[in-house]
Image (cartoon, rainbow, N blue to C red; front, side, top):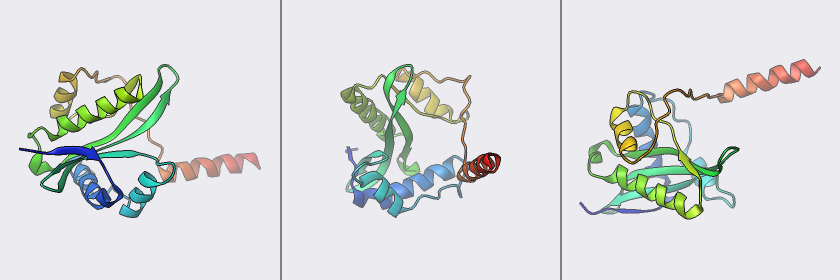
Length: 164
C-alpha cells in the first residue's frame, strides 16, 4: 500500500477532527472532544501556532494524523510532546502509525530536541508494544495530572476570593 506522510494544511482540519473523534471513541471517551474545525484552523495555522500536525494520506484521503507541540523540560531543555497519533481504525496494522511516529521522531531530531514524550493508556498494549519496540520507555510510575477548564475556573475563583 502506498501512502505519504506530509505536513498538514488548514484544509486538512475537518479530516483531522474526524480522526480525533475516532480516537476519543477508541479511548472510551466518545463525548469528550470539544475542539472545532475552526479552532484547529486558528490554533494550528496562526502566526504563532499552538501545534503542528502531520497526516498520512492514501489516494488523497487522510487516514492518520500526528499532532505535536514544543515544550521545555527543566531537566533536558527543548522537547516535543506528541499529543495524539491516530490512524483510521480500518487502516490499522498497515504501517501508517509507525510511519507517522517515524516522521515525528525524525522531525524532533532535526529540531535538536532532547526528548519526545507522550501518554498511552495502560490498557493499550498494542501501542505500548510498538513504542517499546522503537526504544521508548513507558514510565508506569508517573501519573498524568489534568486540571479541566471548569477546574481552572474554580481554582481562580478560590484564589480571587482568598485575595479579598
